Length: 239
Image 1 (tube, helix red, strand yellow):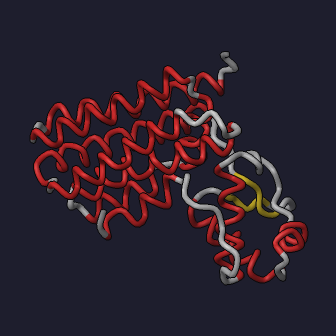
Image 2: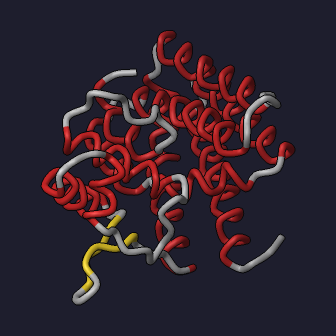
Image 3: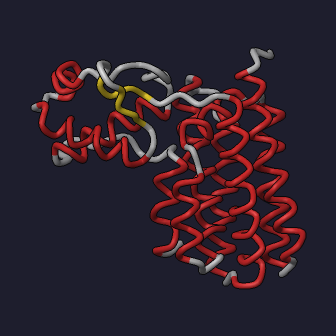
């Protein structure tokens, strides 16, 4: 993967947890973002700076800076008389986000089918392989297993976007991909649905390797719509 995937890598979430020794604002940002992505901080929940600072053994200044960064990412909003809260999405928001993401990322897959190098395909393969390994982990609890699956999923998609060789498109996707929604869908998927998701990864990879742009775009669009459908089921209270 190259420079094109930096923003998308962050957008997808599922990355490593904060490391000891991180600078204050970076530690605060990484920690709070992980809590939002993984659902520890729920939509509509207020971010109490003093409480977060105490938990992270930081002053309130880096926490305040981290909250500003998260607001710029669209994960946090500021409301009058309430301060910073985790943003909420309704059904219409989900539909809009996923439609935008599907259109952009299917275009990325289309370009990747015309521009990918053997190294790009190898990077996609590595993510697919690790996704499969993570699915089969029975020794982990649900959260840790989803973290591994999410990281592998991030790598697959970031590798495809990097293979598109379209820097502006990668930046647009960094805003269009909603990390908490991606993580929620992966956590709620059954084993069968996870297997289907990775099958789509493999099919998209194969069309990219064969240089079939139209099929790559179509498969990516359907793949993303299946994730959207899981989120909508959750919003609608379906089992």
